[in-house]
Image (cartoon, rainbow, N blue to C red):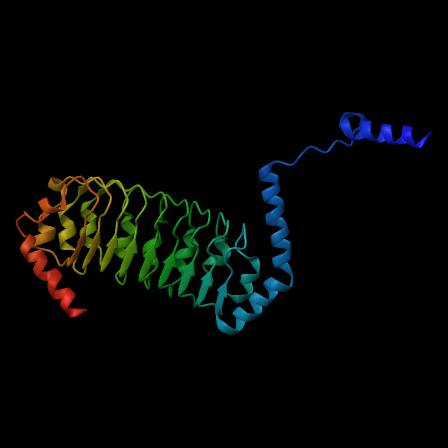
Amino acid sequence: MTSQGVSARAEAWAAHPSERGSRVFPCPTSRELSRRRDLSLGARMGNSALRAHVETAQKTGVFQLKDRGLTEFPSELQKLTSNLRTIDLSNNKIENLPPVVIGKFSLLKSLSLNNNKLTALPDELCNLKKLETLSLNNNQLRELPSTFGQLSALKTLSLSGNQLRALPPQLCSLRHLDVVDLSKNQIRSIPDIVGELQVIELNLNQNQIAQISVKISSCPRLKVLRLEENCLELSMLPQSILSDSQICLLAVEGNLFEIKKLRELEGYDKYMERFTATKKKFA
C-alpha cells in the first residue's frame, strides 16, 4: 500500500471511531473526571506526604490537612487516637465520619470540619469528653445526634451555613457552652426551651426567624444576641430582652422594622445602660 493510502486510511480511522471495532472510548463525564482527580490526590496523599503529616502529628498532637480534596476521614489517624488534641480537615469533600474511630480520640480538644459535605454526625462523636471547640460550618447537617448533650466540655460550637430548621434542644444540656453560631440556617422560631441555654453569645443571623419566645430573656449568661437579617416584626421581639435580660449587645438590623422604632420601646433605656457599661468596661 502506498504511503498516501496508509495516510488516508489513518485519517478515516480517526474520523470514525465506530469503525475501530469494540474499542470505543467515550469522553468521561465531569463527575468521573472529578472522581479521578480525588483518587489521584488520595493516592498522592497516601504516600510520603500523608505519612509526613501523621509523623508530625504524632509529635505535636496537631493534625491539619485542609484543601486536599479528601473524600474520606483519613484512616491513618486510627494510629493517633491517644495523641491528637487538634484535628482540622476543613475545605475537603468528606461526606461522613467513621463511627468506630471518631469517638476514640480521648484527648481531642478541637475538631474542625468546615466546608465539607457532612449530612449527619455519628453518635460516637459525643464520646469526646474533652472536646472544647467544634467547627462544622458550611456542611449539610439537618440535625444533631440525640446524644450531643454528652459533649460536657464543649465551649464553642459553630454550625453556620447548614440546614438546621430548629434550635437544637440538645444544646441546653451543655453547661459550659459559651458561644454558639447558628447563622445561615433555616431556623424559623425560637421555642421556650431557649431559656435553659447557658451560652454567653448566640448568633442567629440570616435565618428565617419570625417568632421568639419571651423565655430568651431568662438565659442566665446571655450577653450577646445576634438576630440580623431575619423575618422579625417589631411586635415579635420580646420587650423583656430590653428591660429584664442580661443582654448588653442586641443586633437586629435587617429585619422587618426600622431600628429607630426599637429605640422607642419601653425598656430601651435599660438596655442602653447595659450596653454603655459593657462598652466602657472593654474600652
